Amino acid sequence: MTTTPPTHETDDELDSALVTARRQLERAAAHIDVDPGVIERLKHPTKVQQVSVPLERDDGSVEVYTGYRAQHDDVRGPYKGGLRYHPEVTAEECTGLSMWMTWKCAVMDLPFGGGKGGVAVDPKSLSSDETERLTRRFAEELRDVVGPTKDVPAPDMGTDAQTMAWFMDAYSMQQGETVPGIVTGKPPVIGGSYGREEAPGRSTAIVTREAVDYNGRDLSDTTVAVQGFGSVGANAARLLEDWGATIVAVSDVNGAIYDPDGLSTHDVPTHEEEPEAVLEQDAPETITNEDVLELDVDVLIPAAVGNVITADNADAIAADIVVEGANGPTTFAADSILAERDVQVIPDILANAGGVTVSYFEWLQDINRRQWSLERVNAELEEHMLEAWNDVRSEVEAKDLTWRDAAYVVALSRIAEAKATRGLWP
Ligand SMILES: NC(=O)C1=CN([C@@H]2O[C@H](COP(=O)(O)OP(=O)(O)OC[C@H]3O[C@@H](n4cnc5c(N)ncnc54)[C@H](OP(=O)(O)O)[C@@H]3O)[C@@H](O)[C@H]2O)C=CC1
Ligand SMILES: O=C(O)CCC(=O)C(=O)O
Image (cartoon, rainbow, N blue to C red; front, side):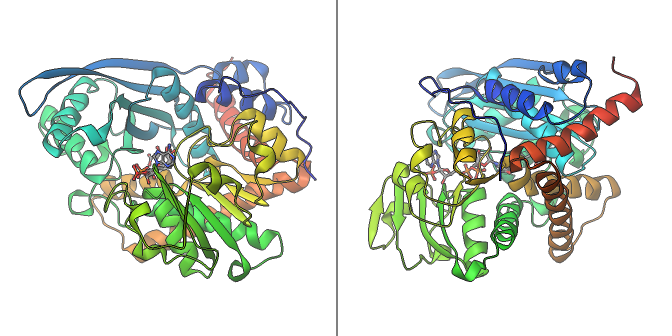
């Protein structure tokens, strides 16, 4: 049923997030009547800030790390997106990820644009004190580019609520007043939202449920494999298990545990509870991260790193539905192969958008000095996800598009209309 033009490039050298984001943009633009000048503009970020982040290690030695903040587009509102601590963070990666944030916020119809940043560091190599010093210094270096109505960071891979608390404290000290709205994903005790930590996993679970239902099936008859057992993967796996699905495999960086009869995912420690502990759990079998992707399951959820489904393994993906919990897990070439094979890929910009959606709720709570209950957050998230799902589904059905192209069409229409209305373009 999908009509994406086949493009069978190989992934010999995997594209960066930026190259993939630009190619996806060009492909989707062919399905919508948008000023080509707007598309050209959207291929480029507004600004990419690079900073040096010196850190005094616990042993007294000094290391200098490189940090970035990419700001892609803010026509619909302040730049919004996470901060990642990972050795492979680069300006180019942050820029691609910031483009995806622009589309993600627009698909969800949130009043935000797209940003993303991070530090090129292995967070597992730092003590908690070192991570705090690094974060405070990074916040200091970014002081001129971020702000509660300018650019609002949040957690991503390798960062968490505590990282956001340190960032908020450092920024507040610079400003001479407490500024909760400078970041989202903070602990609730300092203005964070209940449900934010779980939200990208919850939205991944919600769209999985909707995709299964769309295919005329029921979660109780559905097998699922999840790559990555962090904030996104663990919460998605646990919710889907609670809702009746059989989770046959979960993995961390070292590999996966597999039980064809279903795992008890609440008994497996998450990345936050105990990193690299998945393989230590009781299970009939352990398999590799590559094997997880090729398991014969109904739904595959890649929820760890980018570029894991490539031209090399796309033909071996046995799942009927791939739900992208991670950002950018499918290369451009693999996407075309999956589309030709009628594997439905529910894109990252819809699937994991619960994170930024609850960040928006948090931002509203901070501005209004209110705190919503967990029940309210989850109810509003469910409502927003269903609205976005239905908007995207309408484009899939009306134009016979893949789910990714349809999500781009929804996002681009809103962004282009905002640009035309504000008169910023041409
Ligand atoms: N956190 C958020 O709010 C959001 C995150 N995302 C995206 O979701 C993805 C995961 O983020 P998040 O859950 O926050 O990250 P976390 O740091 O919480 O967890 C990452 C998980 O992936 C595992 N992992 C790391 N590298 C690999 C690898 N090469 N192969 C397999 N597993 C690996 C880690 O294992 P180990 O425990 O062994 O280190 C860990 O279980 C990223 O793409 C991120 O951009 C998207 C939306 C929101
Ligand atoms: O909550 C946010 O602001 C952004 C989360 C994020 O970085 C993402 O969705 O990829």
